[in-house]
Length: 188
Image (spheres, rainbow, N blue to C red):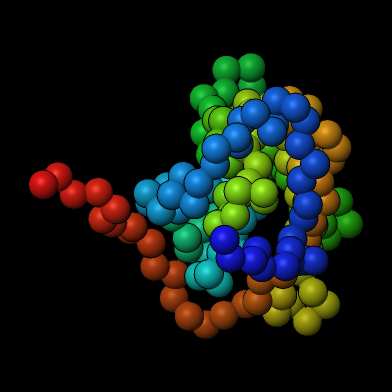
């Protein structure tokens, strides 16, 4: 058996509950949603493979088009509370507010899935429908970088809140939809 690569110190570490451990028992690399043209989650897919994301803003909402796996998120700026009848999804339901130049986004309503699906079983973490993510976005002083910090909590699968951050750079490159084509299984 080969050696595992060392953990990336910049990646958040997930301490799983017993239910969280059971949820990923038997995880295989082939289980990763990415291998089947499915989005993983709003945290990892934001920076995955450094594809170009697109952000559109109106007075009432911000729409984020992820360059990887075509996640489309709507951040509602005109809501103070999440509705009771959210249709669960990979992107969840997001409400946002501006505070001193920082966009604070609260997201719930996630479908069960993977919050982390790496190539090694010891690092996989699933999320339940109780997943709650709070993100904080702000531009750098020169306006060339968008910084995001986030807090992830899932009382069913995670022992404690997980914190992380990332940065994306402004680019002149054009956004293109990913349009993944799943070729992992062909009938014979």
